[in-house]
Amino acid sequence: MPERTPINPDHESTRNVFRVAGPLVFGLGGLFMIIGFVDFASGFGGTKPPTMFWCFFVGMPLLGIGATMTRAGYAGKIARYYSQEITPVATDTFKYAARETKDSIREIAGAIREGLVSGTSESARVEPMPGTAPATPPPLTVRILRCHRCNHDNTAEARFCSQCGVALAKQVPCRHCDELNDPDAKFCDNCGKPIA
Ligand SMILES: [Zn+2]
Ligand SMILES: [Zn+2]
Image (cartoon, rainbow, N blue to C red; front, side):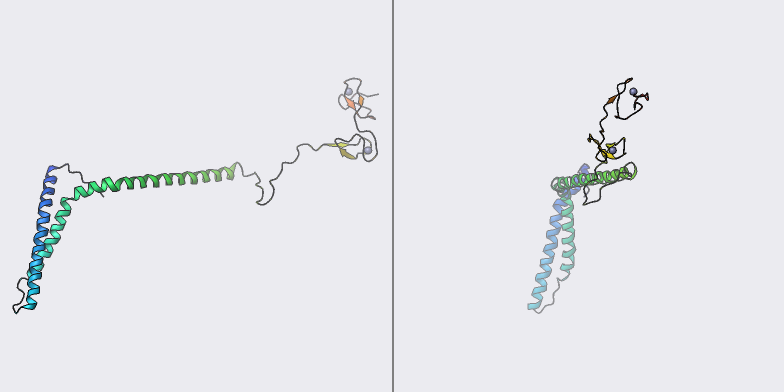
């Protein structure tokens, strides 16, 4: 509803006229209606036909005009009432709706952003299938101690080969660089010079 602020004094005076004339016209229309109704009702009981029936057709528009004028005369008051009583609620509702909308937009934007990120840079990332345990990263180094005699793969902590029983620990120091080499190594693992 557009707020009608009585800035123009002419409008204000017109409104005052309406405020006085409106009820007068309304009352006049009601009076005509009563006259017409009484005349109409008395016409049934008596012998003379209703002659004041036209009062209905005068009173009825007068009632409408009076009501309209009264409403126009108090339109400013009504508008102010609405602006004071209704508008704050409407404003709050609008703010609430705007805030909700903003949050929704933010959520949508975030979803789009996540979608773009997951669609581009994280596309190679393999998500674990729902219901399964998250994939554990594979061990970076497989620690296997291979036997220098029979090539059997032993655990890294093994001190003797589980296949041939040879000592796996590197215990022969190199004479040149002090690197520990296999017991039967002929050349140093580090510097390549002969052990013996
Ligand atoms: Zn072995
Ligand atoms: Zn060496």
